[in-house]
Length: 234
Image (tube, rainbow, N blue to C red; front, side):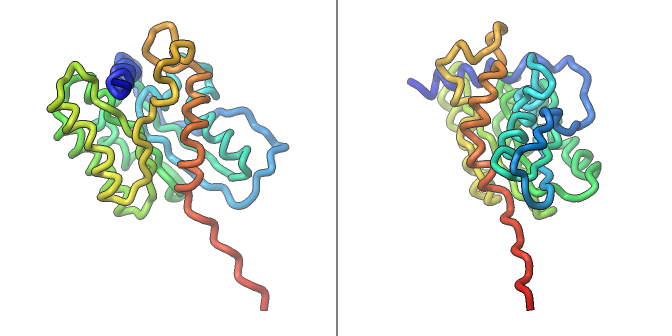
């Protein structure tokens, strides 16, 4: 079945990078494009995730957050994305550092995009633990009144039907509970396309990440708070 193939790739695409040093969140290094029709006040987006955000195996400026920032700016949205992606990270790690990431900003972000949970699955952590950690992350963001885009993952078939039933329900359940915007399966754009996967057969290539940005751009742009209209002249 198609979803099972997708889940296999999901398992491969997240995991074996946990030995890298934990970086401090960084702003996107996407090339500046001064001629883009960018308008309005700057909006800050935090990308909280694992190697799919960290840009494993691609050049600086080619990570998902960097490409997403460039794509948003291409639409005239004055976006600045803070890349808080850590290779090998789990939902537990994301929970431990979410406050640090947010408190390090000058002002609350307009949006947080989350890609976590795949490494939990790869390491065989109980879905209930993944659910609890993501729930706490989303609760913290809800308390701060920060909207969320949740990038979902699927269970690998080798974990069995019981695991799949529990794990696959996590993202829709939490999106509904917190009113988050859901992307059901983040890796869907690269499934069945080996040319979009790096030679390690684990991570998307720069082109693969570009496809993932194209597939999620509308969702992220639509989740941004609408700008407040200036008061009418008197």
